[in-house]
Image (cartoon, rainbow, N blue to C red; front, side):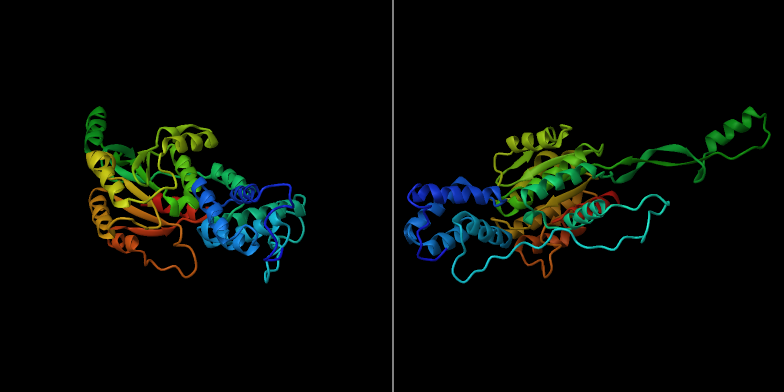
Length: 375
């Protein structure tokens, strides 16, 4: 498509209808396009001229995209929707999704059974690739496959020592049981009874940032929270945005899709602004210091972009660390090449957190569950 060609599809549809259809196709491709962004896009194209394809192209990149991954999707959808390519840009076919990996054995399986088919190996390889993909760059089909991977995730609760003693094969001498057994034998010596402290599951508190900068990861993070809630781990879940929302109850629905829908209906500020410091403060004042955070492992999912003063966020995380057993900060950008914790919010909280880990892929979520289990 040339840069002087009009953006209408012949004379059959008005320009506004064609542009609106393109914005919705972009949303279907995984870009978070809201009604406000659609309106801004139409106004930008009108200002640049409805007859300019270059104006429609650059207006879309400026108003509908929020990340580098969105820009790539925008270019692909633009080329498909308007039936051509813009000047100076050549279409590129996406690389194959299946990576070639050598089988463990050249013939047959380890136990002597029939060799795996090429289709089975391809699916296994594709799943391994998907596990390490950034969830913000996944297509709709890939997100559906990712949801099936979440169903296999089995988070484990961190443990803490209980106050009660329990019978054990080794440990400390249980003087009372040993003495009672000796009395029953009329003073004859016998085996020594042992005891040790039991253990109990430690509470896990998840604080999930659902602001606009985290919208590409919010669905996966809520699915991770659902996996914790349904795995028998004592879990409390809150979302952070312009306000604090307690969503533990809807996430206890067994069906993951219904749970995500119920949680979404309970969150009034999904993909809104960011007030992390205020959200953490409300959590501490209303729930945390009264017992929910005491001795718990608190996991904060956020990229650290704070609308208010970053130092205020650092102060609230310091208060949180004073009552919690461990504070783990999960940043989706932590696992990307070249990342440096330069955001004001991240720099303010680093002195008060026990671990800063990645949270951008299924493999990163699996590693996070191990970090929490051993906290």
